[in-house]
View 1: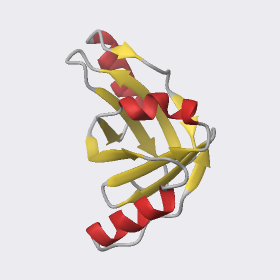
View 2: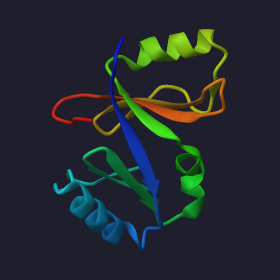
View 3: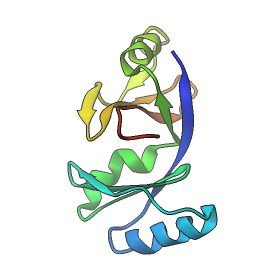
Length: 123
C-alpha cells in the first residue's frame, strides 16, 4: 500500500471551469490533462490540482467537502484499513473513468477521496 500523490481539489462553477483551468495552467506552467465527465461532474487535472465543476450544483456536495485527493496504488487495501480505523464512509469503492475511488471522512474530520488510476491515466 502506498500513497502516490496528494492532489488539491478545486471546486468551481461550471461557468468558471475554463477560466479556473487556465489560471492553474499558468500557475503550474504546464498544460492540463484531458478533461473528462463522470456522473455529471466535469473534471480536469493540472499538475497537483484537480478542477471539479458541474452544471447541477447538487452534484458538488461531496466534492465541496474534500480536503484532499489521495492517489493510491490499491483502493481496496485502503478501504479495508480505513474501515478498521472507524473512518466514516461517504461512498463505497466504485469504478470511475480511469480507475476506482471512494470518499471517506477520517477520524480527524478530514474528508478525502482515495483514487486508484489505471493506465493510461496518471495521478
